[in-house]
Image (tube, rainbow, N blue to C red):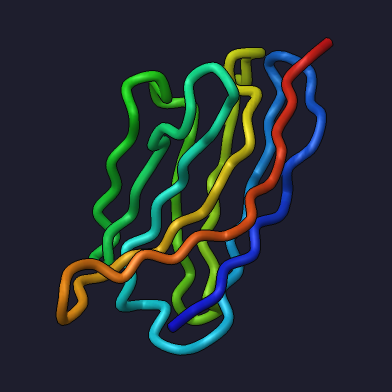
Length: 119
């Protein structure tokens, strides 16, 4: 099983960029699909992007080609490159790793990293 730690959040002006990282400890990182979610008091938790074990990527509609998810299995890391940030992107961003398990799905969460987009 892996443990996840997110980093890279912070305060950025509208139109700016941030790269979030999700670093995993433990083994078998490459066997997990990696997801980024974001959470706000008003909208709750919503999916942002996903990268499968085979590097297939999917994005929420609101991403609109502004974000790129990637993974580096050799270094047990995943990243979310975010460009053209808008105030509505302000949220706690969480990394999630999941894979099929004997009795369902094994799902692991990090603690999150805060992103604030404001002038």
